[in-house]
Image 1 (tube, helix red, strand yellow):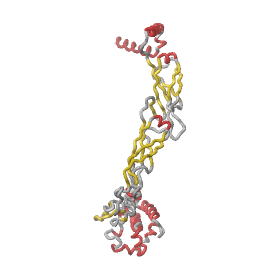
Image 2 (tube, rainbow, N blue to C red):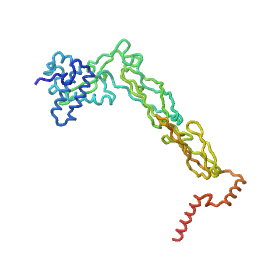
Image 3 (cartoon, rainbow, N blue to C red):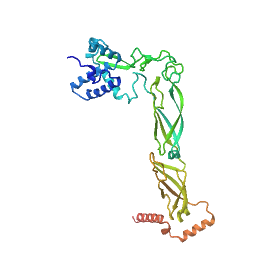
Image 4 (tube, one colour):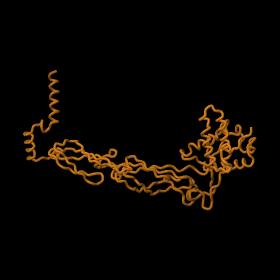
Amino acid sequence: MAKQDFYETLGVQKNAGADDLKKAYRKLAMQFHPDRNPGDTTAEHKFKEISEAYDILKDADKRAAYDRFGHAAFENGSGGQAGRAGGFDFGAGFADIFDEMFGDFMGGRAGAGGAGRGADLRYNLEISLEDAYNGKTAQIRVPTSVTCDACSGSGAAKGSSPTTCNTCRGRGRVRAQQGFFTIERGCPTCHGVGRVIEDPCRACSGAGRLQKEKNLQVNIPAGVEDGTRIRLAGEGEAGVRGAGPGDLYIFLALKPHRLFQRNGADVYCRAPIPMTTATLGGTIEVPTIDGGRAKINVPSGTQNSRQFRLKSKGMSVMRSAARGDMYVEVNVETPVNLTKRQQELLREFESESTHKETSPESEGFFTRVKEFWDDLTEK
């Protein structure tokens, strides 16, 4: 039975470009892969056909031979097909599918036009609570690898350029047959780049990049929280020999504040107040995170640890005009260093007051304690 035309197998025109071939192959390979069609011999056969077709057409030399001689160019072991069962290399097909499915996720495999992208970088930046409230533009210095200006990242000396690797023919990978398996690994000559440099750049020694400190500007939005991550695309390490750069990730940490504590969008503050203010009532003034001031009316008889809520006086909320609330917890301060006259006045107050009326909580507590002791005595 005559083989189907490779272009028809992939469903593309004879003038299809590399991207069209790849898209067609990806779609069909995902549809007919044996793992998706267990026990389906028809799907397995179709998968072999499309893998063989793509393996030939994606290679410029093999495609030229096929266009000229058709299937005859690869029969009887010619055209590099010797040693493959029925002219099909299942290992190669699987490697191509792995490239298609996971290449982007893994940052791209080396070869076929360049080394892998540069590494991502992390930078820890500490900011104040006020900066988190207002937002700010921060200037940072990041030690990293940058593209070599002398060779524009190619790694080759001025006036020269990298040449295609003869070992892998520019693919960056070589394959070796071991029994029933085809092993694929990075090319040992070009180290997976697909090109070799005969006259390396003196500035970067052929790497195409140099170590340098970069000055960057980071826009920190209002409302960021501790641990917020900001991504600066393309500001990571430059790739080797012109490959794409990685990304820079800024991790924010908030400095402890001397007055405020934060919980989400809300802000908490403790304010000591005199015993007289708590007893008689009055007004206190507290600072707010926006740099302003707020007044709190303290009613008479205010107890220790009471909280007062100041609506919309808390933190900014990211990507919103809303603000959290501020909670002020009062701490009633017991007077110290009293004069004799002050002590006399307090004693007069104590002698003229009934604890049940002026201190109901303490009176109630000690009443319960007395009842507890009485119960123990009776037993």
